[in-house]
Length: 222
Length: 176
Image (cartoon, rainbow over all chains, first blue to last red; front, side):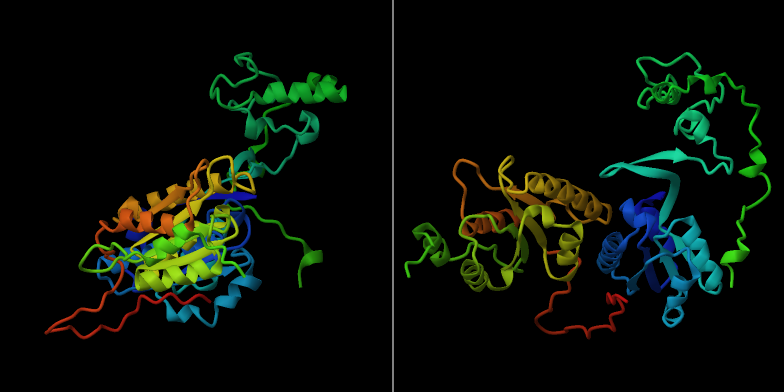
């Protein structure tokens, strides 16, 4: 899932300050899971903004709606009947959602209320960790399901750096050493010999350098 | 049928409410239904006694409380919004009161960011040794919030000459 965090209130208020009719738009998918932009958080932000405006005597319309997803046109189009009532949309979607809404309704400013962070898992309730960089060339089978790109601070492919202490990373002692985890995992599978393979420098062109990536599946298209 | 309302609660209900003079504060009080003597009859009696100064919201556990409940109360009618929780270690759902504490803290930080006093929200844990009935707790919390200035969020009817005409209010909160 994509994780995000809400921007500071002051920053959001500065963004919406020029507008008199604002739609606060939530998303019921990834950002709801990480408690940043779901229906509840949309309600909280809207209420907070309305209170702040009332305290300053500002006459601003703040209304709210939450879509199932902001990154899928079939949901975004549901705004078609109402978006003209507003002069700005404050989106609590991830960066993909903000842009999808902006793409469909290009005549209205669509503002980001969240800072999109990383691809990750819900490790525990209220705790999300990054574990994938979306490199486009997954090698998890060779590393026992532990990604050296996302989880090793130095992004090493060919073994540990040797700086870890008691299984913790020397760059960031708060995180486990990814290579310790890789070795432990492969050892459990009896596959430590996989590490004898030398990995060449990664082809980063599959992740970056060529502009925004895309996937086209003709079998899925109309 | 013999009433289950204690003598203590009866006495509380009969006492004159001690509310600061001047503009009345309104308290939104969410309470765990496990609070002693907090049945519907007591709730109605307290709301009648305190009139617009108190609105009571029973919840199955303080852990059901969401920051949105507190924010909505502050936005729409309350000068302060509090929750009554069970004592630590005594929540029937184990962690509800702990979660409520964190959510109240979060709400306090949120409202502070827009210039509202953190004291407008709070959580009161009942006593483990001598749990108090709802009426007593409500009175104590009302006393606590009575000194908070009237909320600058709420529109209050002005009295006297020269009352301004109410402007067209765009700050409505339609949810699609």
